[in-house]
Image (tube, rainbow, N blue to C red):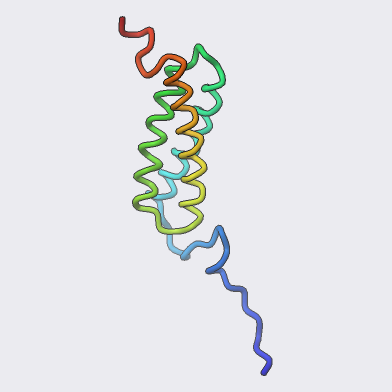
Length: 104
């Protein structure tokens, strides 16, 4: 029996439930921005304070975002931000840490 084909939005990676999620979207955006900052500044030894602090805050916001996330799109982008934040945090810690050079 022939049936009409309908798109199934439930199997798309970026599918949403059609409802607004302002807190989750804000946490996702903050985590992505902090991840990019942390990842980028981790490439320079003298920017370890910025990379370690932005990485730490990005890890915390990403973890809370994962805890309250609703859609796959949010979880996917949060994981990208968390990975970049963690990478920047760990390299920032290796280059001098959160207080390296500030507190003697």
